[in-house]
Length: 65
Image (cartoon, rainbow, N blue to C red; front, side, top):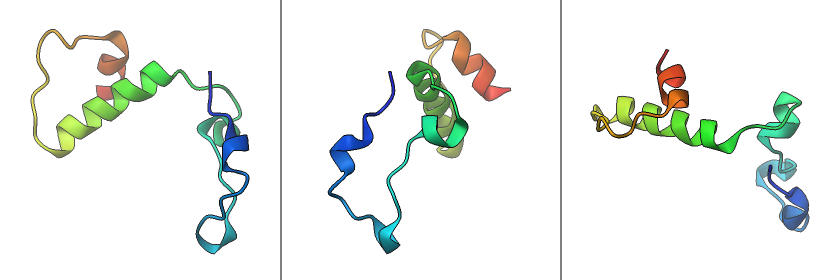
């Protein structure tokens, strides 16, 4: 499932840019769980945090690679 952009039809973004989605930009649906995992890994890297061992999803291992 990806974002329904119709909710943003009345919003005029900066400089009149259209609202878009990862699906539109990449040309395919995006697994949101994989996006979450990558965000967690990158957040931890930026803030020099160590992830707990129980946070051990396969997509996170891929994101670190």
